[in-house]
Length: 392
Ligand SMILES: Cc1cc2nc3c(=O)[nH]c(=O)nc-3n(C[C@H](O)[C@H](O)[C@H](O)COP(=O)(O)OP(=O)(O)OC[C@H]3O[C@@H](n4cnc5c(N)ncnc54)[C@H](O)[C@@H]3O)c2cc1C
Image 1 (tube, helix red, strand yellow):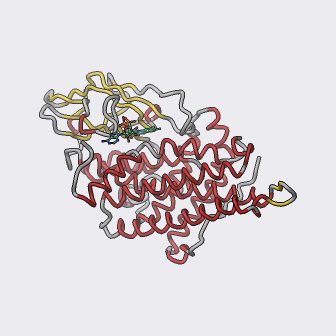
Image 2 (cartoon, helix red, strand yellow):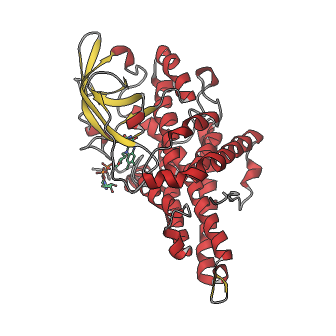
């Protein structure tokens, strides 16, 4: 078993800008990843199995609802702390970060923002401890980038509604206790519904055969005339803006999380390049390898500054969806490029599970697609700066 030597990358002394609380939160997450994630994650990814024993630890480091108020069981932290937690978890594995992102931003966030007081009291404290796990159902077999076309629908049956439809590519679905599901009513208006495991007609088959996010559990949500009590409908907001606001929160976490994956790849490649000798000297001494490494640390630093400023805007309630899109898109691409270049620096060793790089690279192929694809985020920026919609 290799020792986890991760130290973190801070070329522009960003630590000086973080508060004491930010650093405490980050260091707690970092230690937990070193102790509980790094030693086991390669085996779980190779076996394509979700390491469910990590759920307690995720709850303990505040990864479930970091910014949800303490009154509802959350950690009551600011958005920069939330970002730093995501960074450290994704440094370990994007799949583990996905589990935390979904629980926080896609399940706890909508219940907190749009749920009734009763729903908040019932679900949030248990979601914060991991006693209940959730998933988020927006994507459908025929509607990915264009969720407004969704076909899942519910009809009014008096004291309950009857939900029919299917969702695809749902993180955490196979083990989730509840699902926040987006579906249309008879008038075509989108609502969020909390569907609970055990409701008749609700099943969550697992999706197999993935080359990416192998340590994350992905599945479908099938609704065969599921009776959902009206008390489980989120009353606070309807329309596509409701699920999109959840995505904003998750995309923000990804903008930070991918910095973690990139730092891990860069550090691994730098260490390897200084130790590995060819032609009688360390490969780190060759200009071609220095170009790769120097560009990596430059890109990581730019991504860190982008995420930090976005965190400040988010704390002030001023971060726009378009600003979040830009950071998600830029930082995922940055991490993917760094993973690809780091892998090359390790030569043949780079393809093995002895190093984290290839796992990060494969994971990031999902991250560049989910929560809005690379193309879609570009179009969001395009729309924002020109006022012209190139989507359709
Ligand atoms: C591992 C994993 C986990 C996921 N977890 C969740 C989850 O928990 N909950 C959830 O709801 N969803 C989840 N998703 C789904 C994810 O959000 C979708 O895959 C994503 O939104 C893209 O949808 P799609 O796969 O249907 O691709 P499509 O929308 O079919 O896109 C295919 C290609 O067409 C491009 N394209 C589409 N429209 C346009 C356009 N107007 N202009 C130019 N190009 C366009 C896209 O950029 C893409 O390259 C997950 C996906 C993966 C892979």
